Amino acid sequence: MSKDKLLEIIAARTERDGLTETGIAGVRLFRATQPVPCVPAVYEPSVVAILSGEKEAHLDGQRFVYDSSRYLCCPMAMPVQAGTPAASPEAPLYGVLISLGLRIMTELGFEMDQSTGVPPSAKAGAPVPGIKLAAWDAEFTEALFRLLSLGTSPTDLAVLGQSRLRELYYAILKGEAGGFARQAFRTGNVIARSIAHVSAHLEVPISIDDMAARAGMSRAAFHRKFKQVTTMAPIQFVKSMRLNTAAIKIAGGMAVNEAALEVGYASPSQFSREFKRMYGRSPRQWGEAHQAAMEIA
Image (cartoon, rainbow, N blue to C red):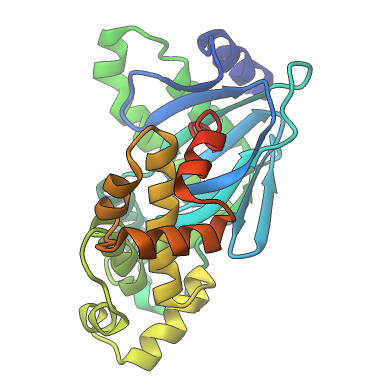
């Protein structure tokens, strides 16, 4: 299956810059015809595949640039800086964002492990990092085409959408990112579980002792393993998740004080200080300058 056909489908169904829903939960198309600088974003568990142009993401100083030759796999929520700085009307960016569902990814990984007869613990190896670029292969291309070729028919989407999404997940797990994603979605991955808990509870106080206790590890061991996965110390990760999430909310029009409270800051002045230290502008200045750039970061 040619990627050109995938590009035709996406271009025909994206009438504006930004995200376009497909009718399948967790699957969205996107287009950018203007450069978007790298801005704070929170990547939820997902795969991002580019059919035209290139996109980039930065995780704690590490730069990932990907295009139609490699897709990005992010199986755990990660605070990043991301954008499309090379997009233009003459060289538009087209792509697809696929959320990775915890239940199905875990089930598929378990079934694959069971089929080999090798216990997951024997394959675990070193902790996986938070982001990986993987080469496109024929099975990924074919599965993505079968998913997007369902079009907009409500009946086709209702009857076949989830089964074809499952097929795409399986292609990801069989591909270059497969071992990485399977390890991240295993039920015994305490760092992945810790990250999911942090992502869902940004509004409450979180300490490294609490995180280590939930993982059933000593503080030192948890700190070491967490940093291997995310490249950041746990508290640095929590702060980045909070500030990136707040930046997105503010750029979307939320009041600064409300955004601060929603990500766990009881003191507006502390929030403003840490925000400015991270991004170089006050929260209000940030929102005014970046309102248009956040949707497809």
